[in-house]
Length: 576
Image 1 (cartoon, rainbow, N blue to C red):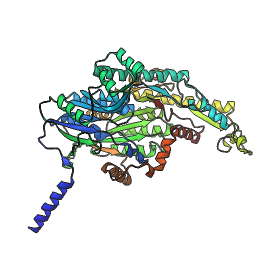
Image 2 (image 1 turned 45 degrees about the vertical axis):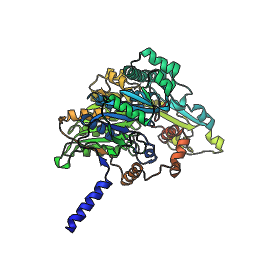
Image 3 (image 1 turned 180 degrees about the horizontal axis):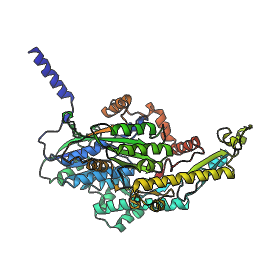
Image 4 (image 1 turned 180 degrees about the vertical axis):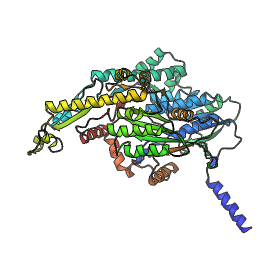
């Protein structure tokens, strides 16, 4: 009796400590997807950002759950890239296709966030919120004159029309090649936004253009008057809107996925993705993330990544791999290590590449041997080309009062002598050797694309020369197989692996987070950590020194001075 009593007490304590689960027979329930209060996660510099697979799985579960009648999309302070927001909208569109409803809540929203919100049946806007619809602009900083003032010379080893990765250092304005290629990318992106808004809000293309060009900034009341939102308010307005779109004659209950502190509904009913029971031993889809420059040790860490791809493909329960690539390139060797690992893995299981914000140049090289490539319409991809740069002393040592002298054996032995930078520019014969090397690697790159993609070399060449495409342009050029997000890539992997829709699957993500990173993330999500910026001074300093991406790009180029690489801009600067 004593033992049974102790067991009962322990059981009651565990039930009290556990989050409240959704009632089994709940009806007319809305799931609040609260995507706010996520900024503290970015303070963990050792945790690489990755797409939220769990979020997509929650949406998929809610779509299949008869107890869930709709979703409240709480994005009042959510910020994410254009590609992430498109992927989320795409997943919610598929949720709606099951006959379910969505209510979106926005506050200070830009055009991308508003495009996401237009997936909803009704949009509620905070009465003190503001909607800015300024369109899209692409640009970059040019530091040619800064380098001149510092006494640093740079030679652009460029022989392909659109391969503009070094223009930041060799020009002071946008080139005609960039104006053409990024102009087409902007045309594709604004068209995607126009179609989303006009289709959802019953506006004409001319009315959309007027909103962008004439209005562009709308306080809540004005947004309501222009028909851009349906209600103004906060919690009460959102709950009333949910009742209205669900029929209005029944009480609405709520479940919550996301942050509880900023929740609109205040629900304590937790909603998580379905997990296959371990006794079922379900098939596994492995999701592997590759982010950063294509490098052997840093960025995508090709040695480790290639090993992971090969080892995962050999696991008995793994039936497909989804490789999520977010990379603007770098080392050809590193990119090819990954491409070869993908080629080896797909002899065992299908390998589907999901392109993130950018998978171009070396990032495209790493992708091209996959069983299937999918990208969002706003992904930057292509950039099939090779380039090099040569930074050298052009008066810097004189400014610093440094003199350099050397002796040599070999006509080119002094090429790398100097302090910080080589002390001289390339000679004509040396640049000629670089030109031969770059064009040889370029020919190899295009030949590999043709072989892996089953394309005629002439067709590849027509889409190459370093040209950057949006996902839409890449699909038209035959460089990818479909438009879609991470969830679409997983569905494609399931189909290629011939896993029936009715069969449960398990997901395994790589690389596995380190123990300390997992502990920190749990502290953040549980509210244990206060989120004070003064505890992370390095992050605060980085935020203040906004040109950090440019400095990182310059540091990378200098570190790899004279190396021939399939690389585009390490950081494209998008202004909204």
